[in-house]
Image (cartoon, rainbow, N blue to C red; front, side, top):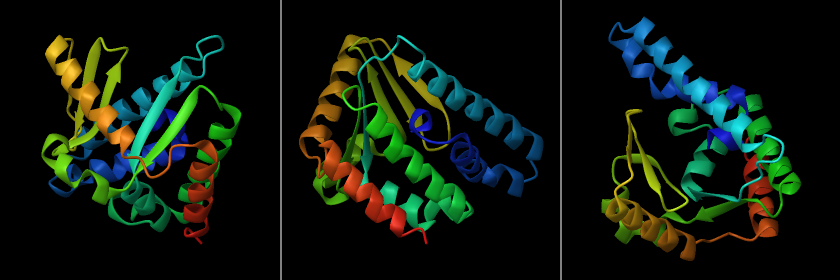
Length: 185
């Protein structure tokens, strides 16, 4: 969700994601990966909001992932409350400002239990214009393919997730984000 959040949250998330490297003595390698993924996040933010490039974009996220962000659990446990709260405020403001071309869809975890095997090991899955699929594993590795069968497979998976959404209309999503933001206090 790098393109929809703040650089501060993105950085803190990457610090936590690659924190294990520092624990085994790979501090420089960790910092290189954090800087690399921070740069990707910034490039995505810049690209997504470049004047005249307002292509439609839909982000699907599990409610539990947003709850972890709000509550400061999981990979967000080391992220300061103020950073998490600002990120949720930013996301709400962004969805308001970009209504019509940026959509956030929130999916309840229980609605995707049967899809867990297809999602296992991936932190994010993206399909771009039915031409390519990008899969980011939980360890930070990125896999991509232009193979039509793979693109179709993941496009169907994302459509299935979208159909199971608990919140997809803007007002419901904004209400949920406000509820979650209140949990950061």
